[in-house]
Structures are given as C-alpha cells and as structure tokens.
Image (tube, rainbow, N blue to C red; front, side, top):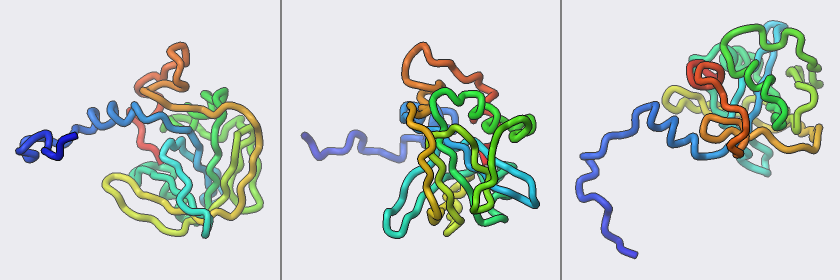
Length: 187
C-alpha cells in the first residue's frame, strides 16, 4: 500500500455533475419509504430512499427531502410524520408517491395514526416521529426526527432501489426515467 496521492493536482478534477452523481450513487442499494404527514387536514406524502436510523438513545431517525418539493414543506408545518417502509411488491405505491402527478391518497387504503399522520397499510414498518431538527444541505433538508413509536406490520422482503430499478435482479421492473426521482422533486 502506498501513501502517495493518486493525483498530485486535485484541483484538476471537476466535481461530478448532478447526472454523474445520480448515476454513481445509483450503485448504492437503498430501501424505499414513503414519508407522510397532514397539512390543514389533508394527507400529504412523498417517496424517499434517503432514510436511516441515527441514534438509539434518544431514538432518532433521519430522512432527506428536497426543500423545493411539494410535500415536505407541508409536513414540516405539522411537526410530525410517519415513515412507511415499503415491501418489494409495493411498486405501485412507490410510483404514486414518487411522481408529482396525481392525487397520492386517492383510492388508497390508509389510517390516521394516533400521532396524527397517515399510516399506509400493508407496509413492512411504520416509524412515527416528530421533527427534532432540520439542517439545510445544498438543495435538500436533512430532517432529524425523534421516534415516538415503531410498528412492525408485515414480514416480507423490502423494496430495494438499485441502479434505477426496483430490486437487484436483472428481471426486476425498471423505472421509467420520468416516473420516480429523475424528473420530480422529492419531498
């Protein structure tokens, strides 16, 4: 192993373009969630693959949302949210909440949680939380949530997003470029 840098002139390397970064980060497989909340009595939500546990004591999670998106600013006002972790068979739910088009909750079965957020049915897990802190990071907000309750709903395989596809197998359905995350503003 050498301790010499690969290049002696790091200033010659340009940062990646948004498209280059999107393609590169597509090699990192992630789970898929739908973050939901209520604004003025109306349910709102968006598909989100940037979700993680932060701390066990106190119980904290985080997600990232485009601060120019339509749903996140509305959820932020309420101060509470539910992260619904999708199963591999919920591609239609992901597409519904990943698109800027259509009514997200129209003809969809969901319940209002005891914490006042929409809880989607038949998901793997629900994490109910309140907004603890928000950090601006470029074109997104990093949202830290204090967990109020977790609900394990179903034991099934999770939805995985990898290289622009659901799942990691070649025969998994591919997402059309304009349906989820490529042309829409998440959040």
